[in-house]
Length: 182
Image (cartoon, rainbow, N blue to C red; front, side, top):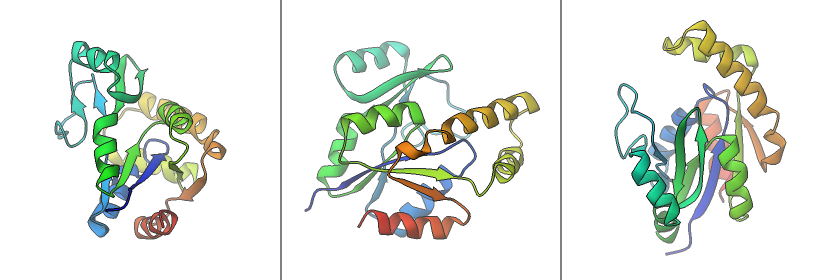
């Protein structure tokens, strides 16, 4: 089997990263999401091993000390990391291994994995992004304002990625991603 392809996918909260990845996985059985590790508590509906690998701080730091992570960082008091063994296993199987990763982690991963295809998902507009975030109905106005400020900061480094894709329509976005990995 041929070597797989590593894809680093970033974008602001509410841009539709999970929706795009899920649609891509439904279309292409070779697409696999690398499930990150985190020390944060699961949110309602999140599943261990599917959304994240939820672990204690002690286990997280032990794994980091053992060199088990491609990259790791602290965000808002919780730790997040990309597991090396899971990513490498997917690549060895010839999979398209997707790292859904924030900008901080992505920039570190890009330095370590110059072979990665890097894609930044953009919303059609800031207004549409706000509509999507508000449509979730899970955050108050202060949290939404913070997410929009963070989105602006994240979008300011989009030129560090090889490709910028506007997620206007999920199926069109998946079409573009399929062409990019060829």
